[in-house]
Length: 114
Length: 114
Image (cartoon, rainbow over all chains, first blue to last red; front, side):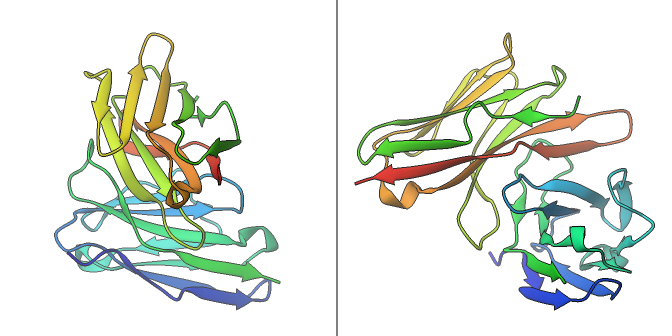
């Protein structure tokens, strides 16, 4: 089974610029998550989708972050405008069911904001 | 709160010895727990999970113990190998009125002494 695919692997931008990340989950996985992982910390949940609907976005800084999952498959996460503190690895994960099953992660996109 | 914490940020173990990584969780309503291994430059990799109706579960060289009375979780790795060097995260499934979501702790770095 193919894993969760994410692109790009690395991105360097200047503050106030915009950036977008893409995720393709494991085929058939209905639930998709975006996490932010700052160096030395555990992943922090940003947003959770069930099919193409948002289940939880309580930790998403909505003034600058947005995410969508059109057609309930691929997802994009956008930051506009970026701040220095957005430097982190952005991880996408998918889950077969809605709960009590493990998340499967991609290798993430490492974002550096200068 | 929605926090999952760890007792020790780093753990150094002699190759061949057993490793024990501990985790405390705060939400008594959490019903599912997962251990992840994260190597440098990669996303978290699922190791083993346990549901709240169990107190022990075994995998290949790994055992997870759950003590709901004191809200404590541990991961035991038998005969630790150099390939076990990584950061280990515990995560809990928290359910509220709107959604079920996976929350991560801050991680323990496991290093292996030859």
